[in-house]
Image (cartoon, rainbow, N blue to C red; front, side, top):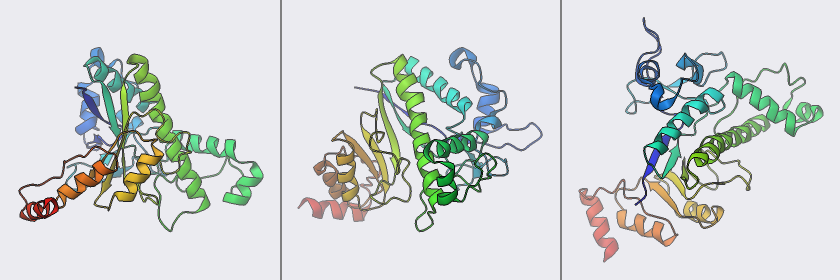
Length: 297
């Protein structure tokens, strides 16, 4: 048996940042009060607010999802070198505790506008386009002084301008670079046979949310031992076939929010070469039991 650790890269930065004692709840309380330097090494920065994603005005970027967290949800920035140090400390401690690998998820950038993302995107544009191309394709006369309104982090159907597409490409490649540095390079330097997989979302031929939508083929799933995608409640046949082909016939699994046609869902996944996951199998649901019985007859 192999033990695979579940690793969140950004999403677990929940908590309260306002109050008489500053950022004290959730992740912020852990970082301020519970970080054990004997286990994790010295803190990369003193203030945990230096680690999180930012809005264009410099304020902390937060979302609120009822049912997920009683607090606002902040995200560590994968382009922030200090946040990468935090994640490396977690990787090291997980390996020391005996995990054989990690399944890694929540590569969410959310259009972060921190100093590292702005500088990184400008460098990305500078390497890919001449000044004339920047002016013609994106309306950027002077890249050094240009103020971005956003750095697109997710595909937006029917809203993709040339600059949004280019920033989407930057975001996807940045996520991959973070994975490579933290897990493939650092993690496997500590444990060469470390099993790695990314847990990504809504993989479709035309996605609305896929963390590696615009990766070039030579980077797509590079360094991963198997694939894992959450496909929601979508009909998943084409997604599974594309995943198997794009992944070079590597093992894969999907998180399919199907709790009625359980037997059909698992059989279809197995038929396409994947490993079924029965996380949402509700055998106590009368409709599910009737559907499963009819499917097996």
